[in-house]
Image (cartoon, rainbow, N blue to C red):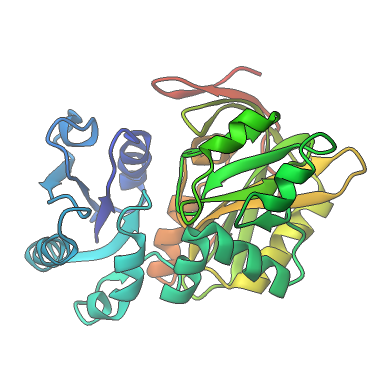
Length: 318
């Protein structure tokens, strides 16, 4: 089976994970794509992968789609796993077109993807499903009036990797707010958590891994500690059942000082925090392939409780 990772960029650890799976799937062929000729993925030194340079989707979505379809046809791609936000919406929108080519895209419905890519829509979706999430505002009037009493956060409505993030802890910082581009979010103090919540290709819950964030870099978890609590897994199941997403859902949450958990961000794809999940013994990539092949999926009942840091590679420190 031929698998394509799109917008692989610097996340070469996904390439290594797939190469390690060739011992289970003898016919597994790995393809990677990116829009930059100098990206680490397209310069990854291995004869076990095939590389594809695609046009930048921001410049021309139709051109990107046509080129991607040609890659799928020419190489008999049977599974596409997107690794960045850039092409999520068009892949979700054209998911059935790829199915006609006997190619499964590991992505949720177009409607759900649109909701997760827009933080305003994400907030409304959480409220609809009675999922606890910080309150948001689309203008600065009310937050600015209360800035001495409470702390707020500015974020881009569309954005990833902490784009537009700013803690509004003084009046001057409100001048950076741009209506239509940004929103204001209630600031919740507490412990920052990261969830990887995995569903199969039919939207059925398979498992979840929870991490306590120790440090961040460029909007991604850089150091983390794997934790296991039944209450957290139950919450993850509730998220899974509410959204019925496909594949991995990369989530951020904050546990406040009273023990309440607030969900702050949802990314409908594998994210930068996945290496910690993988290191804990949860091989979500293998589970996705087994789901595609209609094989029995075996995930550990509990993860390895480790601390880890992410450098060039991810390594366990304890």
